[in-house]
Length: 293
Image 1 (cartoon, helix red, strand yellow):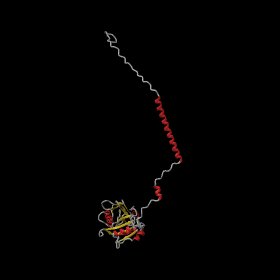
Image 2 (tube, helix red, strand yellow):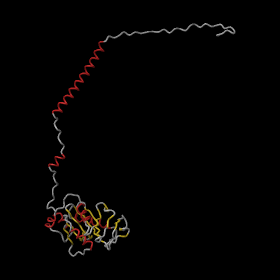
Image 3 (cartoon, rainbow, N blue to C red):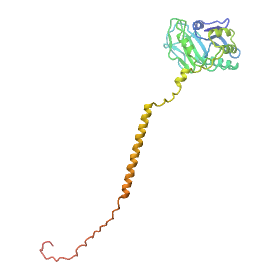
Image 4 (cartoon, helix red, strand yellow):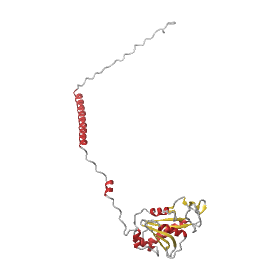
């Protein structure tokens, strides 16, 4: 990775350690360190890293003493390491994440004023502890598009993974676009076009890759196979059996209708029943002490 530093810049120990990490990476990219952006150099930016897939702004933080443990990053309040305040070598007023967000905004505005579409710009707080000290953040995501990474020259794996994966977009940053972005940011020590090409930047933006013939065949809908001779014969047999069954059913229905129409109608007989009338009422004369009376 190419690293360009402003002539006469007074880098801190953490920034020099950060530069050593970047120069050891085989990743294609250019890092611009210690320059001012905005009107009349309104904001100091620690580092801007341009890769073929995007831009990230880094705010570099070192330590005044050896501290190890879990880094806690509250939404409001000072950062702590193992319940102790993080003794950073550069104390800025306010939240470090707010400072990083303002730097990202300043870089984006400077590029847009030069009619360069920067797309989405990421940001990262780069913590550089003393060598041999282990610092692990409780969470790596600070805000959407802003992360925190910990790295020094002995353990720069997290930083390398971040730089190789912070942007998953296409390779839209060619050597000419990077060169124009350096001019827009007012970088005094900028890389040449030959250096950018030698580092791995494209001369022209590559076209979207066309799918290979093998991929097209894999995703194409296969045409239906023609039926075999055995399948054709079985189909005709099933059709003939179904047709014969329909004929038998129709013959049975026709025979039933013919028998019903040929049978003579039987005469209807009616029977009447006479209800007998009750016998006439005859009064019975009863005598004293007569039974059944």
